[in-house]
Length: 92
Picture (cartoon, rainbow, N blue to C red):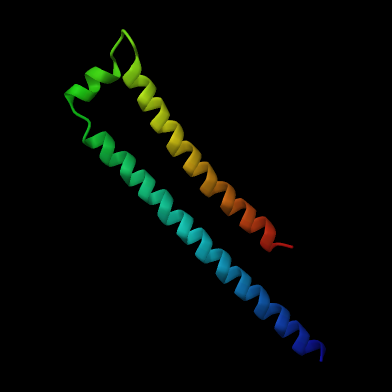
């Protein structure tokens, strides 16, 4: 009886770990997508965009860039926090 109970506990733990793995893989895929998007944006940045970015009078383009960076940072933080929460929850 005790052995059957232990086997059931271990099977439940394996299921939980498999679920967590899928969650982490999904977050990892999204982080790779974000990284690739950032690299593509940087590679496609042309002369005009460089001029806009350093535009000294209003700094509007700089604000747009900072907003974009902040959006990416928030999305990445959300993914990281979800991963940490899932790991913590699975340990209890």
